[in-house]
Length: 517
Image 1 (cartoon, one colour):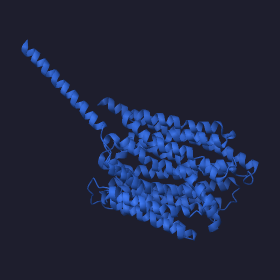
Image 2 (cartoon, rainbow, N blue to C red):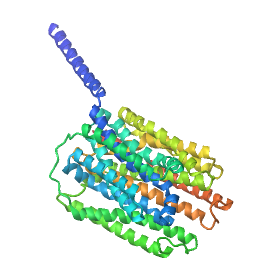
Image 3 (cartoon, one colour):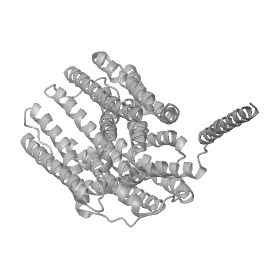
Image 4 (tube, one colour):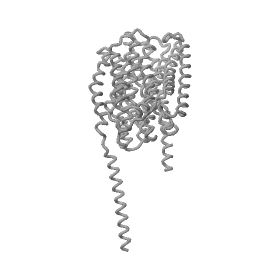
C-alpha cells in the first residue's frame, strides 16, 4: 500500500513537471523578443522597396505633365510604368539565386546604388529614352530590395513573431501603391515632378544606407549556386511576353471599340492585336520551357518542386489574383473620381489615402492575429470583409460621390491589408526551409504580374465603356465612365471571390492532412 502511494505520488510529480516544462516552453516561445538589428534591417531594406513601389505609382498621376514635356501620346508615356514593371518582374526570379549566392549586405548595397543612380538620371534626364533607362535601373533596384526584405524576415524572425513581421513587410507592398496617387497629386500641384526624386535621394543615403550598414546581418551561409542563363532568359521572355500581351490586348480592344481608327505607338488596332497574340505565344512558350528545363536541371534558377503541393499552389493563385484588385484599385479610384465625378487630380489621389492609412495600421495587426489564431479565421475573415467594398461600390456605382468612393474603398483596404501578407506567410510555412528563397521569388513575381495585369485589365474595361461617348468632361462621357466603373467593380468582386474559393480549398486540404496525423 505504501509502495502504491509512493508510485502514485511520483507519477503525479512527473506529470506536474512535464506540464510545468511545457508551460514554461510555451511562455518562452510567446516571450521571444524581436532583435533590434532585425527591426533596423527591415526598416533599411523595406524603405528601399517602399520608395521603389511608391515612385512607380506616383508616375501614373504625372502622365499628363510628362506627355506635354516629352511630346508623347498616352500609350507611349505608359511605358514609364510598363517597363518598370517588366524589369521588376524579370529581376524577381533572380532573388532565389542571389539570396543563395551573395550576402545580404552585398545585395542591400547593390539595391541602394541602383536606387540612387536611377533617381539621379530621372532628375537630370531631359529625353524620354533617358527616362526609360532610369526606370529600368530603378526597377532592378526594387527587384532586388523587395525579396531581400522578405528573405530577411523569414530567416531571422522568431517563429512566434513571423506573422506580425511579415505584416510589417506587407506595408511596403500594400501602402506604397495606395498613397502613390496622393503623393503624386500633392507634389505636382506645388513642385516640378522631378522634385520627387530630389527628395528620395537624401532619404536613401541618410536613412536607409547607414541603418542597413549597421543592422543587415548574415544568418545563413552562402552557397556556390550557379546562374542558369538559359532559364533566366526564358523566364524574362515569359514575363515580358505575358505583360506585353495584357498591355497590347487592352490597346487593341480599346481601339477596336473606338472604331479601329485609333493608332497607338504608330500601329492600328489590328497591329496591336497581332502583337498581343505573338506576345502571348512567346510568353506561354517561354514559361513552359522554363518549367520543363527546371525539372531537368541540376541547378535550376528557381526550384519548383514545392509547387506540387496543391495547398501551396492554391495559396499562390490567390496571392496572384488579389493584387489585380488591390493594386488596380488605385488606378480605378483616381480615374473614376476625375472622369466621372469631376474631381481634381489632387483630390482623386487623396481619396485613396484613407484606405492606405488603414492598411498601414492593420497589416501588422493581421500578422499578430495569424500568430495567435492560425491562418483560417484571420485570412478568410479579412477577405470576406474586403469583398464588401467592391460590392457596395457596384450597388452605388451610378450615384457615387467622392465620400462614398473613398469610404467603400476604405472597407476593402481594411480587409485586404488585414489578410494579404498572411497568405504568403502561411504558404511558405508549409514548404521546406531550404526552398523558402524559391517560394519567395515565385510569390513576389506573381505579385508584380498581378499588379500589372490589374492596371491593364481595368484600363481596358474603362476604355471600352468610354468609347464613342464624346469628349472628356461631357455629361455623356461622365456617364460612360460611371458605367465602366460598375463593370470594373463587378469584375473585382469575381476576382476576390475566386481567390476566396482557392483559400477555402487550400484550408480544407490542410485540415484533412492534420486529421490524419
